Length: 171
Length: 298
Image (cartoon, rainbow over all chains, first blue to last red; front, side, top):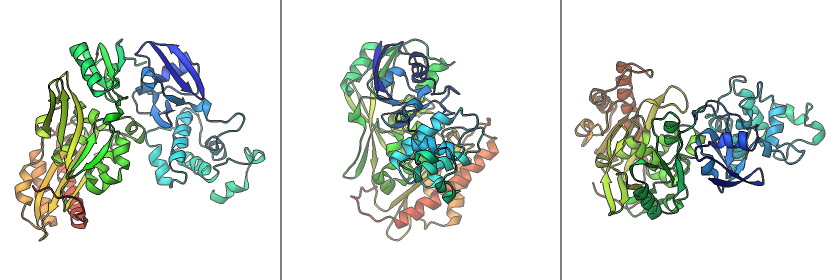
């Protein structure tokens, strides 16, 4: 069958088998391998992408079900050379170690902040409760998302990768 | 890599179209809504439909409507919508409580009340909630609509009264003034199925006594309300001693299995403890509730 969707702002049309899962369509057909493929059972959340702005686990959505919808993957988070504040937050607050859960975590964070720009730490923890990180113990992920909430326009370019003064405010 | 067996896929454009597709493709066709039960089953070959009829475009079934003495919930209403609804929280906090512990926030973006009820998993929370609230399931088929009580609708684990050529389209929940309700679940970790859960709905009379009380249990082998507790509770003023009595009756009434989530005595203990807790919260919510909606007697 033929499906079309908008992915990271680009319209794509492909011929697929109906049983193809969205995660495999994104990774194998579109070669966007930033979306990770983990447990296959809707538990780990590393395959999270945004469908019409809402986080979904792409191992449990058929590519056919995304036909006509808008998908955002981690590759679509940055605006040109400027990283999304969520991506900057993960750098500033060391929100990752091995990086496997990171794409899904960042997309959920983006959707959370779009919905609720000033989340409480507990709300952040709840938002990411369907995603598993085996490295960080979650504390730095929560702080990364808080950083993004506190810097909705991102950091000034020169402070993006260095110790910023804002960093000390909430450390 | 878990991939479903091959199937043909078609999108329904309306309820009538979905019914026509079910009729055309027959016994080997299945309806998919959120897909968070069916797709995992298809990956494991526990389900192997020839045709998948996608009803996610049926926005006509995605609504929450306070309609006189009834809350009408469209079958395609997502868990997230139910969780975030102020009307639901005000009228039926048991639904909000349950939605808060169903799967995880991302799964809740996809899953629907209709899908949950039709899946009828024995550890599924909304079946218990709908039993407790005396909800009515509206089922449409080629011959028109049928209204089913939860006792008629929910036949047991993974089995409902919805025929192959029918669709659950709406859930109707009667609004009762002076009522309070609550749900609580014990789970091993976020998103897991319940070890056990309980829900209660209580209506208080003007003199502070209980005029109606319903308790239901999840995942402990009881596909009906704990009717045994009603006689004990009705006509009484709520007290801890009364809740303890009801808890004991619930523990006796359930029939849990020992599995990786715990032994039988632990699950009976949870049935007892959770029954006490939800009755305590439901009674306190009933006492605090302001009757600002049309009253339905009974």
